[in-house]
Length: 265
Image (cartoon, rainbow, N blue to C red; front, side, top):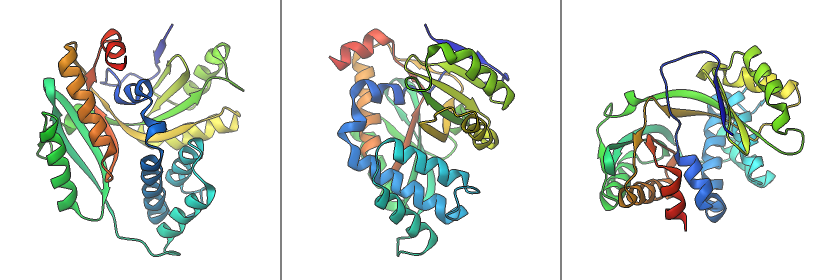
């Protein structure tokens, strides 16, 4: 039974379902090389922005923790850090946000890192067109999403379902905004500027964390019950996720569980 507790109310409902769909499809294991490339870029950017000291550069700490959770080799992580600090040569990259629409009126928000924004825009426009969506102008869908911090706590080992009340209390004391039981993990949602403080509070309490990131959460969701449209939405998000320059895909679709199960068969 899922349990969601809003600790500090804010105008938001629904969650980004794309991460759950990826788990259902087993996409991460199949694209580990692509995943490592995304981690490398995030680590490099974090080190460039805040230096290599993970005691003070919380973005870098979160990126490295996420990479290690996916078994990214230590020497690959170290190279990415050195590229960010200038110890190794690397291309100049910039962070950009792209917006678009998937079939069924689903809003899509993309976080990207690129060394050539014209190439990236052209590639994304082609992907959207191929999968029955369209790349939109800046501001078209961004207002539908809220930037939030999210911390994942895996069940198993040191944490089990009986620890839920203790974790809820820790999240409340650290001023998190929302706490939910996702079935196989707990998810703590925070204000963007509280992400690392809440993560540190959990760490001090010896709570294992397998992900800590800033993300975009939709204010409202669009129900996609039609199987054909749902398939188009998933294929579009999948193709965008595979794009080398895209770091993260956020969308506001809500596909019923039974439709997802049929599509995954």
